[in-house]
Image (cartoon, helix red, strand yellow):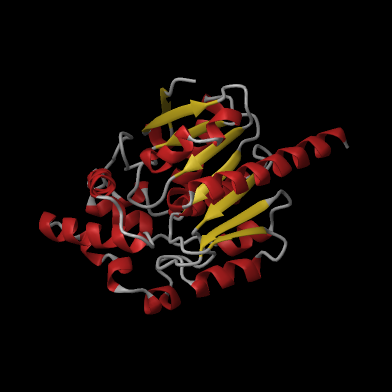
Length: 285
């Protein structure tokens, strides 16, 4: 399937740019990118084996990429805008109980969707490098390196922004990025304003209670060389969700779908098959 672009009206009328690829008749995977990122974060999935079997939907989250970027912290600092945006994409594209796949902040967006809209319209949730501990929690900030805290990404000084963004991106990966990939990622990170970055990253949500209340499948994906979602954050998440399926990637950092795409895609496909099978069994019952 040739990639398609959609425009979806989300919370408050914000226009969301949504990219679609893959098998139009396959089960839907709704891919939610991370903080200050872009739908292009999922480029390897759009070109890989997942696209042969699944319908892949990847929006630019509000304030990111080609989506609208309204001014004002209230558009980003609470759960409702993000949750309603996900609901709008599901409805506008007629997604039949998609599997929500959220990377980093995208995992929090998936949790916020469930906290407000429940789980009836989805098949399950996958979180990648996401913790039940909020990024602004004191115990999280205390153990994060300066490059991961990325305070300079909130600065109005563009040189400070760029320097901090590059350092943050390097911290997200266990191995150095190619010059081309680093340039591309720096470019799409710089499409996000400092105000949007700050308001969206430092919001707080009760993620622990949200995921623990779910009856549908939850998958936790984590790179063992993580610097962003640390071991303590991962351990807190698996402890809160003892029944979740867990997938770990030795030698991978914050983005195992980029660093270990073949292994990641295989694991996600298997988890999705089980999840959509779980849905079918529930419908038959």
